[in-house]
Amino acid sequence: MGNTCIVEGKPGTVKSDADKLLKKHGQLNQLDSVKVVSHVQRESGDWILNTLMLEGYEVPFKYNRKEKYRSLQGAPVNLTYYPQTENVAGMEFESMKVVRIRRS
Image (tube, rainbow, N blue to C red):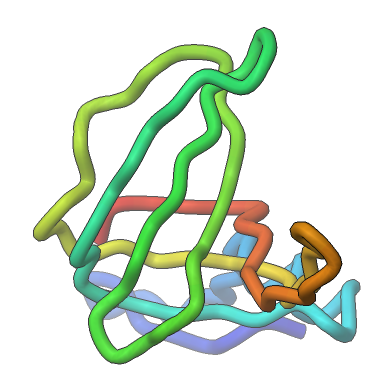
């Protein structure tokens, strides 16, 4: 079952989308209320590639969108992501593939 909480004096069960994803996929990770230090958006074919650098992390967090989005720089965000390795010019670079992002 989910986490038990009390809302306005009424007990209930809360099971967020992130909790469901984390339980279903073993390699999936979650970060809550992390400050975005840098947010870059660039075109990649029909998609906009978004790259985030987060406070306290040296690894880029990447995700795609169909349209440009307002800058998240300085904003706290909640992320659900997978670790991944990219091969660029024969060198391997670690990055994180974001599957869910929300402003917190």
